Amino acid sequence: MPATCVIGLQWGDEAKGKLVDLLAPKHDVVVRYQGGANAGHTVVSGKEVYKLHHVPSGILAPQIQNVIAPGVVIEPNMLIQELTGLEARGISPRSNLKISERAHVVMPWHLLEDRAMNKTVVNGESIGTTNRGIGPCYRDKVGRTYAMRMADLVSPELPNRIEEIIRAKRTLLASLISSEELAELDPEKITAVCQRWAQSLGGMIGDTTYFLHDQLDAGKKLLMEGAQGSLLDIDHGTFPFVTSSNASGVGVCSGSGVPPRAIKRMIGVAKAYSTRVGGGPFPTELLDETGNKIREIGREYGTTTGRPRRCGWFDAVAVRYTARLSGADYLSLMMLDVLSHFEELKVCVAYEIDGERTDRLPCQPELMRRCKPVYETLPGWNQDVTSVRKLEDFPLKARQYMDRISELISVPLGVLSVGPDREQTIFLI
Ligand code: IMP
Image (cartoon, rainbow, N blue to C red; front, side):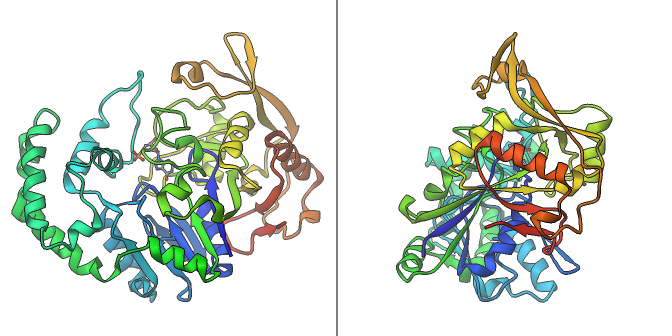
């Protein structure tokens, strides 16, 4: 049985973790295939809330195999903390987690480099990364010469490799980071740190690509868990204000090693409004009381960094683009409860750039910044929906809002979410 993918259609934080957690019991393997500790997935189980960064959201179910695939960049300290945190709560993540030896390692110099580069202004604004070393690690992966993979952590060549890279990094980073920070790059100390990582994680590091192929051959069901969102995709998002991986549906195959023909179902996830963290254009952003109201009701603060998220109306131009890009078969519309107490709601149906109307997302950031949203106004339902469990029980105005979004992006509704708990989910598929 082939794979189902859960893909964010906005700028991340679409509550994908909740959906993956709900779908996981119907699958044999859950696969994380891109991004790293920049992601923060919240999974709620009963009264327990779990915040995951690297670990796939299927980890709570012991019968499900979880895979961190080659496209992920791993910050071992954070991963070990995550595992220890789960263990402290009675879960045994080491028994059902495999980590690809091909996945790249976020090294201490990547963290220093990310922090230093984050002060740099690009197109008049800082990217505002999560400071988790993601960009510098992917940069070294593409550059190859100074890259470190999980396989290197468990190799007898480790001390030589660290020495070789640090020698080069000291020269390369001299103009970017302070002399105190450069002094932290001590080959012996860092080798010892890597050896501790290898000791803790070594038992889980190995092949995942043949493993996934074998699972497919054996008719097992795979669930592919996307991180971030399609508008943050390095090739297709709002560049340069994006992350460094293919966060849209196009990244599933390259990141996991699963072939395109194995993908059976793409579920695109979007909130009923928009949010964004970090810099970059955001045409429907609300810098007013309405934006604050969405932030407070939706508890829109970053899982990884705690930063307040920028909030705005649903942008159907952007989501129509990403739904096509990711090939969404169904829309999972999240956080509908947050919009319960508004007299009216707006949906962006087109942009106006210098007086010209368009329904396409421009490529250049300066054009994106000049996009004025053209809104369609819909009546709010002004009624609590947190206890709705069936489509028929939604207020009519809520049905109209959801149907209009589905129509604008040309994707049928598949899942509706009216709160953080598992039961607050309506499956139409
Ligand atoms: P980086 O991925 O840390 O390099 O950050 C690049 C951009 O992507 C910044 O604007 C971040 O705020 C954003 N970003 C990265 N990961 C996430 C995420 O999981 N959710 C939302 N935004 C993210």
